[in-house]
Length: 339
Image 1 (spheres, rainbow, N blue to C red):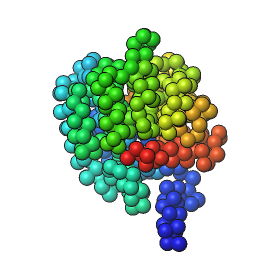
Image 2: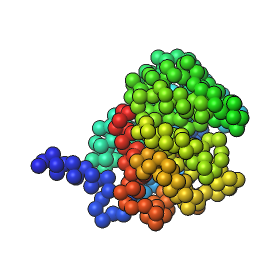
Image 3: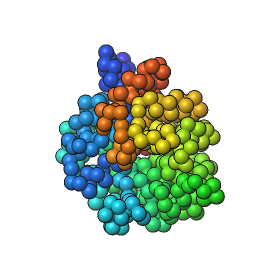
Image 4: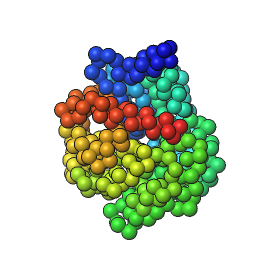
């Protein structure tokens, strides 16, 4: 009876009785890079995300990406450090910010951390990497990253790296698969307990992940190609493949991934992609991947407060149990199965 009571109490902490505010798990933001570049604090700032607004909006877990700019993007951001060194500095900043704000948020290294944080009324943070170029062909580096707390890696960004190739409007390039080192990376990430993220990856690389991954994988911040034909978006078959793996596709809030040539994002645009992706992949395999602080379009409601606008709109189309899955339960399942 005591164990049953504890289990029920733990569930109530995820969604308080009489409280219509839904818990939120967001699989991708680039806030950490902005904190690094601009020297701003994570607790309160003028970015899309800060801890105070997350807390106000009932956030449960935020995936914080160490985005590693390369190519033209590195020049634009005036960042000219080697990717691995840049990651080390950003992960040091991440650790300092979490330590400084441990009254509000704590890290997740294994699934039980998420449950404990929630029981203690704290939000959770998952450290991720956007662009596996920092591996530089060294498989042992994955173990180093794991030891530093990384629990998800977006295999590529917009350029070729040691793992594989990015999405492309050139069909021939888009169908390029993972390199031999990329296949080795997928297998080692499975062994370690790191989530594989296929957002930004070529379609050929995507299907190599399908072939070689023995655990669920995610597209942390991607939309439906049937509604918007951007090469970053997922075809129906890709959505089904994510579902078959047990994974999750997180809807991206970037206007140009939601509607062709759109300059501003509205909650209704996000809902349309959620509805479609649920229809194709099922309600157990769709989540949220805002890409906050990595998108430069206007938003119907600026910053993390936008989450509650989206939640309210979802109530028009989905029953509460489905909304819970999309908002946090599906991501919780992947964390449990992979970590």
